[in-house]
Amino acid sequence: MKRKKWIKVLSLLFSVMLLCVGVVGCEQSDEGNLCAADFVLTISTSKNKFQRNDEIKVEIMFKNISEMDVEIAYYHLITPFIPTATNYPTVTEMPPAPYIEKVVSQQSIVTTNDLGGYFESGKHEIKYKAQFYLNWGKETEQMFVVWSNVIYIEVEESL
Image 1 (tube, rainbow, N blue to C red):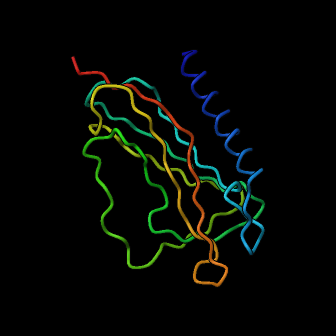
Image 2 (tube, rainbow, N blue to C red):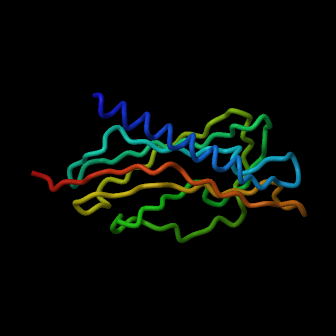
């Protein structure tokens, strides 16, 4: 139980460090003075060791930590970046137009991704990327990319 708490604490500290780095190098948008550091993407799992064909559920939280309500446009808001996942399905179809969603200040979008069955035995690094646009369709349109914290899992052969 202590190890699980330490993993969560370290994950949170890493996210805060990324946020601090992002604030220092913040490129602001033309409207609203927002930057990528105004959004946080965090991921977590319930444990870090799995059997080969276990469900591996990753909880993903995208949060607007700015003081402003914003409207974002995206084709695929959150995508995984897992170089060692084998046979992970890739998105091949783009929607004809982006999805538009209002994200209120301090609001989170939470989803779960099941990665079970896509890993060989061994250790794996998992992170996700959120990619979206502010001011969609305007001259001041700007794309933002926000990376999540990194988590590590170990997959063992099933007994």
